[in-house]
Image: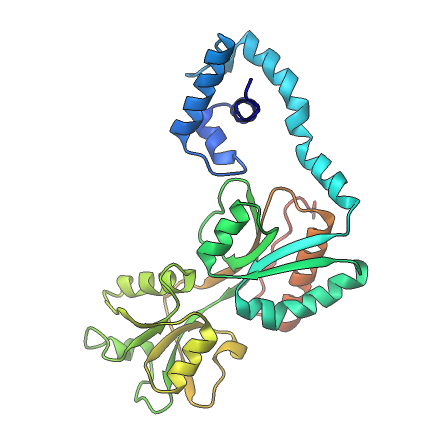
Length: 304
């Protein structure tokens, strides 16, 4: 028997069907591929393992599940036990700004209880961070949350920031609505790549106002957006974080009716004790420095 086929059967049996198993797999797989591989397992055994509609394990399926379940049920616990014998390691992915300006304080606090902690830090755009998380190349990502996280991924909402527009102080603009009062805005738009949540939320808000405003300058960070606005190169999309938008030549315009950006910590599977300690310190740090933006959400499985 193919071990991978047994793993797929375990998830199908555990969650009561192929479509439900697809939603709960710890890695991405399409429903047709899962169905095909389950059929190959049944062909290899020469037995039917479950009825499809409604779902019900056959006698052979019940026997096979009883055989494989103890192994797959205990995989995560075994991984935790084995990793606990090594020097604790945590791989964190986030934007360059988060890793450079905000995370160091959190890590310093965590090291008080875990002085031998080894860290891996990786910066990237949101799609890259999500892909690394799914591939288990990082243990924790700090990213804007778009809807519900994928199957197998846990999330802890941390902060909520309003979207804002940045304009040069020399510009004769006093409100965001003034920019598109005559239709298409005349000033160039400076924004993050279109795959980033900030850009998507802004464009969705424009659409609700019936406004089309293509990006003229695509920047790789919000610091760059602020700098180019200060230089007079256009209007920038940002979030209301003073450290990111403070500049003597830049003014901030609120965006009424635009959905806010929600920053979250996301990770695969159950959080380890080390990860729980990091998440607790992140929440404590946010409460101290950005109490108005903090989201008071409990860590999954905390029992609180």
